[in-house]
Image (cartoon, rainbow, N blue to C red; front, side, top):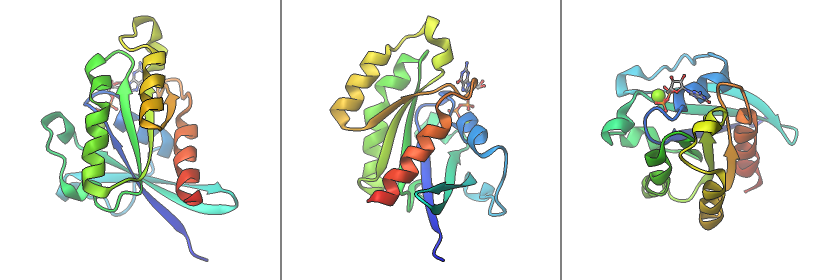
Length: 168
Ligand code: GDP
Ligand code: MG
């Protein structure tokens, strides 16, 4: 049986919740191939989509995004991407299109999704969900509001990407 394995990169400004999201989704199961040496690593989780076993490898950064210093190795071979911003960080929302371009410059067009994290902080929101929906519409991408803290919609994001990849 041929197993489907998907490399997923999770990008966005620092502190939007990327590492938290990956850890939440994968429940702390580290792979043996921990890639500390090249400054990147991934966690993985296996799910079933349309009767197929899919192995999702979620690549995390070690904070290099803060310095715009993500290496090519991080993007190489990526088949799906989460573009993440935070409800309480306006700049992180405004950076979404530039993250999309960065990913596409490295790997071309792949399955992508826009994620508005920290939706639990909606009372202090600096980005309205309607703005995010408009951006998603413009970029023709699916949009998910999430709260990693409250475990809201995290599963759905990765299930969507896996399904999108499989249907291609
Ligand atoms: P990264 O730099 O994008 O990897 O962000 P981190 O995962 O390190 O998260 C940055 C901070 O945001 C941490 O203090 C997290 O606990 C917090 N955080 C992450 N997700 C959420 C969320 O959904 N809600 C709230 N309130 N805080 C979150
Ligand atoms: Mg991080």
